[in-house]
Length: 163
Image (cartoon, rainbow, N blue to C red; front, side):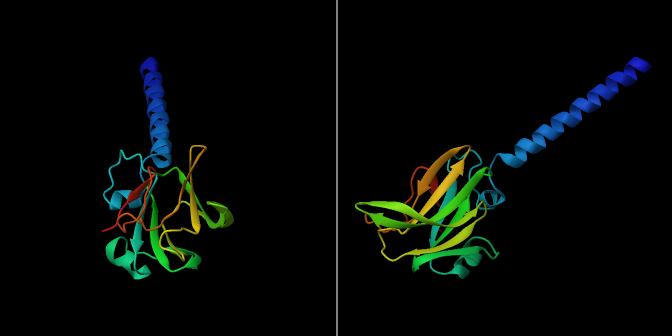
């Protein structure tokens, strides 16, 4: 009887440890609740989602009935930015033109939550750089309107969720 009790205790401890590991991994990796609500494939390799919006109220109408932080730089274009992966951190920088390159200027915000971004004086020249950090890797994205077709420019780390 004593041996069976020890086995049960050991099995119980192993189950608790496995549950704790699963909880930690599940809470750190995978897609965010916002990505789930947007019905984004859980196996996506995209890090953030973006949409051009006309007004802050459009976010409530089309995406989520919540209030989100608004980060501003000079300009009137509005973008809705949503982290897709749980282990992503976003730094929002103002950007300036130096010679023929757009470079980071001042840090505006750091977040891992969805936000609204107001920026860009020009349709095709961004004045914002979004730095996306994941697992010690850093990627950059600047939202602007593509001169090719007038849609939101996205790169390999960004999913266009315009509805």
